[in-house]
Length: 70
Image (cartoon, rainbow, N blue to C red; front, side, top):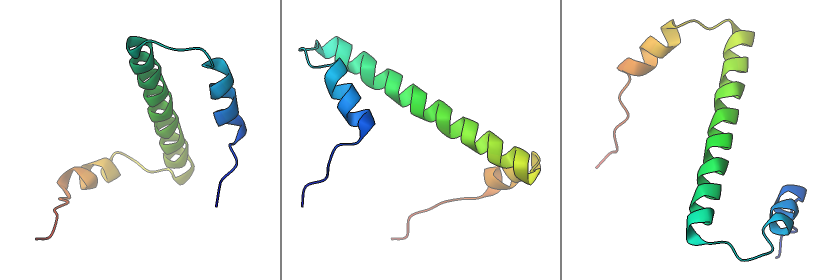
């Protein structure tokens, strides 16, 4: 089953229809990662502001340990 491309994917394909250097591709990937990371932080900030969470939750997270079983 094939999935149709969304508007963002189509726009990116159009923008980069010409060959890009490896250096340009790495820089573009880095920019996209920074954009998405910033977006996640903004959404988290918005959520914390709505829920009136304080620094206490970060203190709890800092003390939690995530370990793989095995």
